[in-house]
Length: 454
Image (cartoon, rainbow, N blue to C red; front, side, top):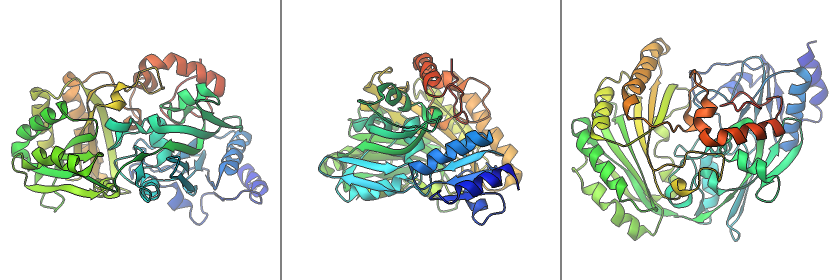
């Protein structure tokens, strides 16, 4: 009997979840993450039910001297939620959610997905900033930043985090909030999985919906330059209630037609929202118009179909200095050369509260106004991987003259040679390294955009 099997046998009677080894029923399904390009085989998958299971999994990894990866929703495109020959600490079974509608707070376990949290909060006409793809996990998205439809009005997901129950590298369970372990609370709001495992998170909620003005419109790629210039001009005067994004994508009808789409979500009164999106609906006019009143929960699923689980993905992302005419020309030229109808380029507009919070107020240094470009190469035929990865890399290289240094940590790829943490955290990096030395001096949590201890 192996050392792993011996220790699993000892732990199993008290472990509330399941401990899966290769060959066990459910192992192959449990090891899969959203990105089908990632195919790793953990030595053990600890499918946790609560914080006690998480703490036991950490202790087991220490005993066995195995590396760990932590999965919440498993959406991280770089595959950091899983690991070869180590222990995957899997929070996916941890689905508890409690809403205090009077206090406007939500407490949810680390395996909850945004669609699950939204369903419960919207029962009370409440919401907090969450992912634009509803199957994303709340924990990874929040700790790494948290882009979403509400961020111009209410900030990033991490700006709405009130507290987190953290399982630390030494097995302790700490509460991180403004009043308890405040330095840890500062660090986890942007520091990703570097400081511990978020067994549960508590959020501030806001009155949103249930019906908002949102949706998308689309124009032919031949008119894409005009559409993107209009998008840029609309963003320049957008109120905080209005979140905007644009995308270069293929038509969902399977025709292969290439389009430029504009997406909007207005979280204020419905009448104000309809007035705000009216010029977007009128411009062109679009060849597809699916913009108007819709449930907030539906808004959060609009992009789900474009990101099917198991598809092969390779992404690169960086902020633009400006969505200039030259940048627009390059985007269109590069999308014309895109080899897969599943691939797309998304331009996310940053303004409002998410951009106004001070760079040093949280670990997240991504406090800019402007545009974040995400180059999403996606395909299903493994034999086409080299071609699709090359298109993404070549497009990123072609856009280099238009980039500023800022990058979003949750979009960072795994094969980048640069010190990604230094890039992501900028002026906050030195303080983060000091706190890493305090809370995880052995760098136990390192399968992430890693902050090295001092």
